[in-house]
Amino acid sequence: MSTTDKKSGYELRTELLGMAIGILESRTERLEQNEHFMAEGDSTYKRHKVLPYETEDVLLVAEKLYEFVQTK
Image 1 (tube, rainbow, N blue to C red):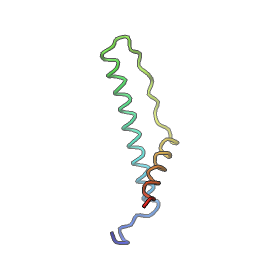
Image 2 (image 1 turned 60 degrees about the vertical axis):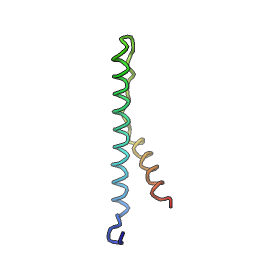
Image 3 (image 1 turned 120 degrees about the vertical axis):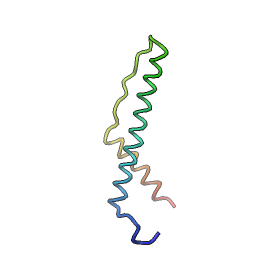
Image 4 (image 1 turned 45 degrees about the vertical axis):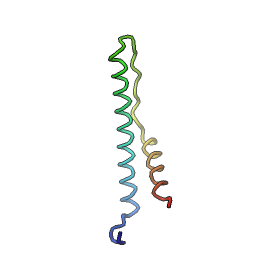
C-alpha cells in the first residue's frame, strides 16, 4: 500500500464506528429473532425485552476494533 492509500485518523475512526454499529445491530437482531423462535414452540414462554444498544456500547466495540488495528 502506498502512502497515498493510507486513511486519515478520522476516516479510520468513522469506519470503525460503522463496523461497531453493524456488529451491535446484528447482535440485537439475533437476540430478537431468538425471542421469537422461543415463543413459537412454547405458548407459555414469555418474551424478554431486547434492549437497544447505546452510544457507549458503540464506543466500546469501536475501541476494541481500534486496539486490534493498532497491534502488530
